[in-house]
Image 1 (cartoon, one colour):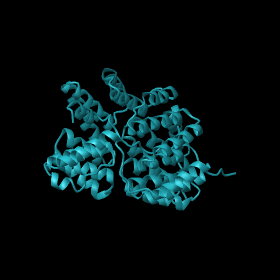
Image 2 (cartoon, one colour; image 1 turned 120 degrees about the vertical axis):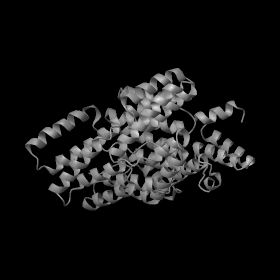
Image 3 (spheres, rainbow, N blue to C red; image 1 turned 180 degrees about the horizontal axis):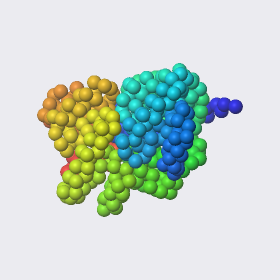
Image 4 (cartoon, rainbow, N blue to C red; image 1 turned 135 degrees about the vertical axis):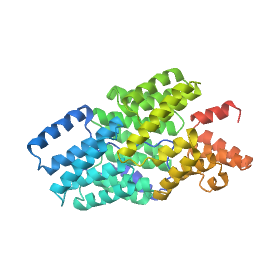
Length: 413
């Protein structure tokens, strides 16, 4: 018998239909895992591979193998799994071209992981049409709409998922939408429901990481949330990175360096590499920072080879640490694909860093701490000092823990 969505979250989710245009947060978490594999993911992949040698016509197992590869790529930051995932999923669709919602969901997950959000939306729509009762099809459709900036459709899809299967995957998505709207108490409540529903170590670790991200966004870095995640799953990559960030935020920078080294050793994800390099720079360890940035450039090449569209992260990195003109190229391309607030803010900063502040101000925002901080810099470059002071004050109110904001405070601004 199908469970109804818990009344409190269902009511909260209905409110979210009126969400404003997606603006992004300082550091948004990714969507929930496609599937919970916990510690046996590699073993499950090997078992599927062995089985398919004996039964190569099993379309369902080919689809499950593809989903496993997508999840393995997420956990290891190794984009080499994406071509493997695509091969397995397309083989499943070849064997069963009609009604194969598992493979269609896999393609939606894969294209979303590659940041091909229009493609992810289209695959999720096909999956939902093939099996309207598949909750993950609606969840992935919601994820794609969020990234494309259509929060009304995102909420509609999420509500369908909630009605079909209230649980960790749907509650964490609800929390994500409430974070975007900055309805933080509701986001916290959704995460509490997710934690109450979590059964496996992977789900528990994931929810605690999201609690840490919410605490960070509201200006209260929570080391405890990440340590709880690591207690549930020692070595969980997102928790290692979050713990390093929290340590840096509360001034324990020597410990943070060690924590970042562990995090990038386990999962060399581009954003974590950037943060590690910036921390090393702040400590005057420029040679070590440059080493991390070289690793990052290598990672960008690997992700591109795996089919990942990395213009947003690459553009942000080039704007701050590389070639601002290249940053503008990356972000103009990304903005053409999805003109969301998050991308607009990054594009504005790249234009400013390239000496084009008059163009930048048209895209500048102030709805996150990072956006408000960047806007203050653009306004100051244009001689709008009073506006710049207001934007900087807003950034400090939203999240005083950003490293650049702490430097501004140290300078007495």
